Length: 128
Image: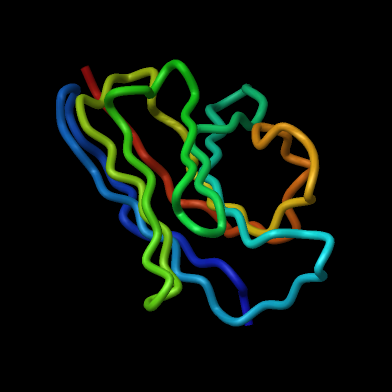
């Protein structure tokens, strides 16, 4: 069973909005890790980059500078689901979007190596 499954991607025009979801199934992690979650994206020919982060409790969030004020990350623990509301989309947001979960206790949330589980991605395409 795949631990993380993304949905909600699609094609929109610049200025439009999309809401991504990431359904998390049961997974385990050690006491050395936390159940933080994050969204990453990878454009064609580019490295995977961190977009947004949310702590296990949901009380702490952080965003890449390029999406601050436009994207909002949230999680519903009862539904085991992570969300990314994306507004004012522009062509630079075009990428495959991935959710990630369970991170090491230390490190910068933007580091890919920190995360134990990854989804398979959902494509977001923004046309001008």
